[in-house]
Image (cartoon, rainbow, N blue to C red; front, side, top):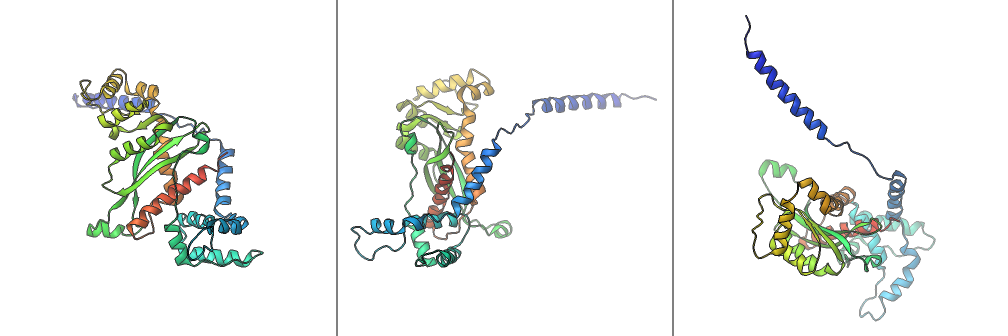
Length: 328
């Protein structure tokens, strides 16, 4: 006795197989284009950068310059030494361990120097002035920049408390403006740090106003699809690659620039728009920098005061820029 049920099963099975095969055909094969010889050399240079007490060669000259015209107790330790220790602190060494390192270095160096205490290391690192700007070699060029935000954990502990007792300590929000130059260096030229309520859109517009003279193209995700951002880019004549929302209307008002961008986006398939605008260039100068920084220096801070937490986050991206500058 035959039934029609197996026929229906076979039909649905065939449909599922066809869908699976179609998905397999669309799957891209990853092609590793990295230059491994160059990348290996960069990793070796990182270790050289971490443990390179070059400040010992310029100690006296730097101290003499720092104390010129200073009122009060003179400096005893050069700022280059504090930057050296700040990078190691970003790598996870606490202040007491840093004092121990300096003690060992002093005992084994041909000229013994005074060892800085861990409390003074803490004060000097938290007062260290760091800046983010366009490199001198790129000042005459127009750079492709991107803006994105991410989060940093305020502590590396407390996972069980959050899971069991629903205790939330909040997190630190970071918004960066990354850039890529002709030598393919990808570094941070501007940064803002705050709590989770930091307005990413307004922060991005503030960064554009500050750095517009060096911006040749602005890339951003769909969060920045707003009239104010498009109008600001139009004011400074900056080309954009901002992802448009799917439900965007070509009848938008008060922003002719956004209206034109919506018309362009609606007039072609998404993949073609991505190629035409170079939207894929956004990832390496935003999310790629976040990924690299967190992989090298971690995604949490050890400071307990809010002001020092924000400063420690900036130190991590400053140290990331130092590593990028090692590239030839």
